Amino acid sequence: MTADHAQSSLAAELHTFAAHRNELLGRAKGKYVLIKGQNVVDVFEDRTDALVRGYREFGNHPFLVKKVTDVDAPLNFTSFQL
Image 1 (cartoon, rainbow, N blue to C red):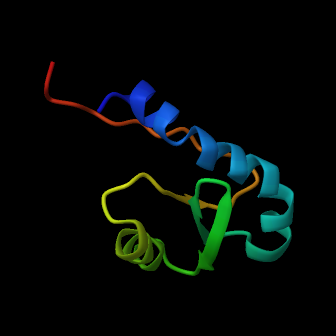
Image 2 (image 1 turned 45 degrees about the horizontal axis):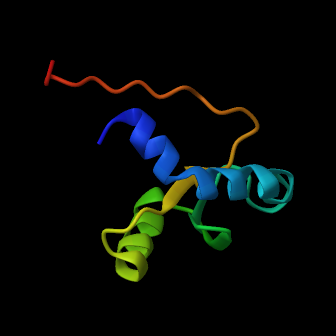
C-alpha cells in the first residue's frame, strides 16, 4: 500500500481526529486515540493497547491510532523495495 493510498483509506479517520482535536487535547493530551470512521472509539494510555483493541474490533479493516499532541510530528518511513 502506498502512502497516498493509506492516506486516502484513512481520510474519514483523519477528518474525525481534526474535528475532535481541541476536545481531545483538553482531556487526553499525550494519550492515544482509537478512531474508526467518524467515531472516536476510546482513549488509551498506551499505543499497544489502542492497537490491540483496534485489531480486536475491526480486524484487518482500516482504523486510526494517533497520539494526541499539539503539533503533529512528521513520520518518515524507509522502504527497501525501490
